[in-house]
Length: 121
Image (cartoon, rainbow, N blue to C red):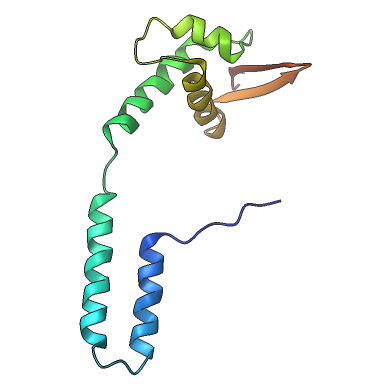
């Protein structure tokens, strides 16, 4: 079952512009100008990565370098990378390893009750 994609804020503003332009509203030009300004502000806000996002990109690489071909669980990965003070829990490792799996750089395998991660071939 595919998850339905939600509209972005800018897409919602664009739809509102279409509605306002199509309606016989007295202040439609002012409303369109306002909505276009909101789209511009929202686009500027999203133009870069936050400090945490930048740090997570670095931490994904730390985790990738800790992975081997033998296969490791999240707990085992955490034990290998816990020296990096930015990685504070196995939950953090789990969230970051998910990014590697989504990018196709790591493989998630279920072996009985264990979930094992390896570098993708």
